[in-house]
Image (cartoon, rainbow, N blue to C red):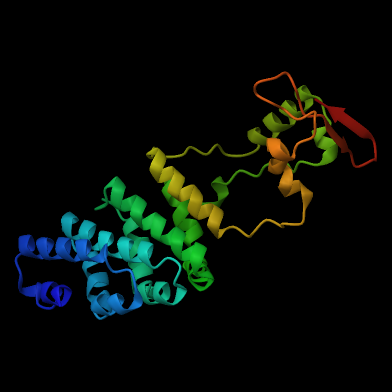
Length: 254
């Protein structure tokens, strides 16, 4: 058992040897694809989770890689995901995201957020666990550098009636609303970091109703199901929209 040989007495290794051992285990995890193979590393999960608290960046990177590969390989097995994502691991990773100065490089940061995404997408129990751990506050902090709720902007609710207003009227309403709120500035992040954060937010949100036509509007842009008046990038065709306001007045627009 090569994994046990690398991890069983790792505390007695030098830091360089520890990192080499963890790198070997991370490479082995690429090939841990079935439940029987998972048994080789199951008993070491707690020890690996504890090593995320190390002050050595290389150690943290290797351990994150180990967990990331395990989560990717077993993303459709909710039982193993729950076994991997112990409460201790989730809390440690959540702390790692916000602690300053950070030990995480961009790749490791992205891998942790992506693991949270997989936990939420494929294991509802873990999604609820993350919500109870105030993952929303963590996400706000990662985007804005603060978790103060007062900095959240409230937008104007859009109704059929407001949609029928002229452009100038809508702009005036939006400006008036913005003036009554605090501006929010997002901290600088790489496109991949922002993508993973937004993906996690989307996965944590409630599902959109599948039977509501409002959330099926994207299908109207698919050429295969559009009518003869559908938009075509190679022609001068267009989509003709019809809607009705709150008072029952009909509108149409190209």
